Length: 310
Length: 288
Image 1 (cartoon, helix red, strand yellow):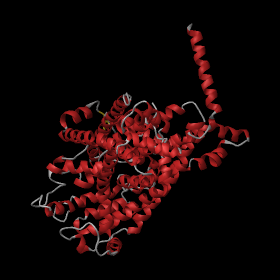
Image 2 (image 1 turned 180 degrees about the vertical axis):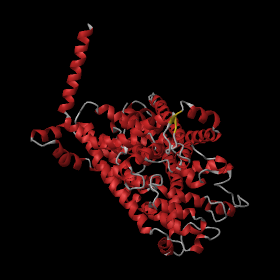
Image 3 (image 1 turned 90 degrees about the vertical axis):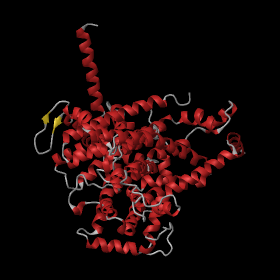
Image 4 (image 1 turned 180 degrees about the horizontal axis):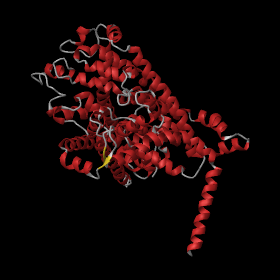
């Protein structure tokens, strides 16, 4: 194809595209309000983060370009950040997969219940994530004196001699935080699974029976899971968000900063630099690293889900 | 007849022991999940001497409303009246939710049914952003807010709530299930897009917007909004709750009373619309 012809063809397709855009102009009016707000408060912040991560910026003065030095400082000189990465990684590695599997297993178990019990069971398991800030009540349950419910019960049973400082003793903080996160982990993903289970085609189960499926676990692996891959992906996205975004729970339970930074998370660190110290460049570098990690995790899970049912 | 066959099939793949084990598992974990909530409800009605009973009892013996009256005494002494926090949270939740539902439904309808250049790319971006927790965008958002001069106003909490990717995602997925022929028939009858949207789409996707409402309420009702708001009179209920519980063990009873007030609204909303939520979440699959 000669260059002139190629250019002409390109021009033509551009003209067709423009024509199409004009023809569909009403649809752009429909999407405009959402697109503007979404662009401004969800997409732009990501771009802004990436930009500022290469600068020194304290809001008062103009940002100064500093290259990769924020990233270098984070990874080489900031011991607290490395501690936060370690903590976040531990939390995500425990609560992510367990929360995800628990969401599915409980949804599946609930689906096996008689119909009249289902709605109630869904409510019980979903209630912790919908009642939101009520997780603060855990700070009373795990309170460090003998009036804390857990201490009192354990002392009564003779397991403990004296009250344990659950929320400020570095030996226990991580465990307590993980318990509370798991308590809240049956969220939107769980609801998606409950719904997804009821959409699986019943005739597939009958066909499976004929083909020699013997128990509920085989049925789950060969029929149920492959029929709801979309929901599994949705649930995975929800789990990643929840497990990497931990900050509220650690702040409410152990304070921020927590004793010896024992449960300091990456997001805690980000909030510390962004809203307390106003080192926006540094905070943005943390945010950028977090974005990249989450996208990477997402890709990984996509690969893993492709293997389900094989 | 068909039902009998169905039951038989279940029996073939389900051992009685397995069914029992599942039931016991659900019971045990159900207790773990419900315990803090039961604790909150009981503590909210306990007189002070019962709260500090040793060993503690879970269930209230002599229920009283004194924690609630203490709460109002405590709050009327505070600089900003408690009702102001309640109003702020209600105001933010209601306006944010209504705005989200209107704006996101319009957009979701366009992406699902109008087939314009760029619709698929836009939806892909929405799916990617489902992953980002609010905290991560809150730092750069602060910069954007200050450029817009929205810092320390209701707008800084309400308007970003309009852009909830999850709301858009669920609405779009639900609108996908509405047959195109329905819309085409309306077009042949001479209806304009706005009319189709208002008269056909909105009523049909009621389960979806009830679901989005739940997620939005969950999000806004619990919004502490402490990042963008400094004025005490604009702060929200969860912020006040944090202050009270932060007051330590002496405020345990009042703290439980506030916690109870906090969880009633989202829980009731969920109970009322549960079947709609499940119907909507059945379309939540992400296809790649």
